[in-house]
Image (cartoon, rainbow, N blue to C red):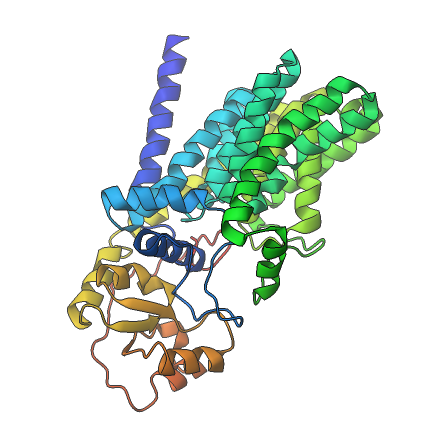
Length: 459
């Protein structure tokens, strides 16, 4: 009814405002975000996908080609128009989070608003939206592909299936790790080839596969020169952190969801047997399986399969358990309570988290263009100061990093965070030869509760 629709619009606007109000203060600047920003800024300046925030790889190059180009092309365009800042860089992820939610609503067969609300409030999804990474962009493109794939199956529409292939190719060009979000599509198409052994099933697989191969193939040729060059590049990396078989890490806030999913799957298979494996369930399950088989998850990557958890539960639990609505309400209340608690704490700490204070501190005490080493918290401030910047605590061994930054990078200023006081980093980089220029002091609240999502800096 009209009143209900107005209420939904009101809460949707409130949700958007919560994201915008906390976008600059959560998370605190962290490694992945600043590393991606560094690549983006280098692309703006040089037209190349390179990093300069750490010493080069052992092989001597600084090419950041393990990601696709799409995210950097888009984020660089945003920064060219609106300038560099926390809000400007992170808004790309938030925008695509909203696109992903739109496709979740369209894909859902049952309880559309419930699935939408559960994912929108999910702690991992909210954190990923602000992360400064490309995951929500890849997820939005992948969910668009899944939505059109189901539509094309309903109508045997080859035009739609071709578009599914295009979106799949664009997903991989955002980050190849997102193949896990698409795996279910490819698996079902291949399964149907062997299951039905018809020309139509073969044609469908080919129609989907051609744009995927062509789009990603263009990137491989332009970036690496050949497939051989692709493998040579990966072999030249110090580490990819990409594939480790069955290395499962479950974020604490996801444990209730995972528990309900496991119960649903076991109950569904035992009750329905083969009938449980519908096309939709096969797409969702195979993507989840390949993710946990191949991806070394540091905590955030599972957002690429997160909607599939909710689809499997909402689509299947009602037919297995008469009181499923109670389970849904408990999951929703858990996500809502966490979301509201986190937003409340962030807004209470907004003044203390004001990154403009850090920028002012750096720009007032370090000459423009100076070469700085520090941790990720200070990268945006260094950019504002037009300074060159490198991490003093990430990549290579401490000694190799220090030797490079002292003799080649030739650092001039050290910004030492409290967490590194008394460590080898302070002894190497500061020692007795540097004099203290200034100390940053903050009136940060000592609140009793810290909501740590999956890294210390991501609350």
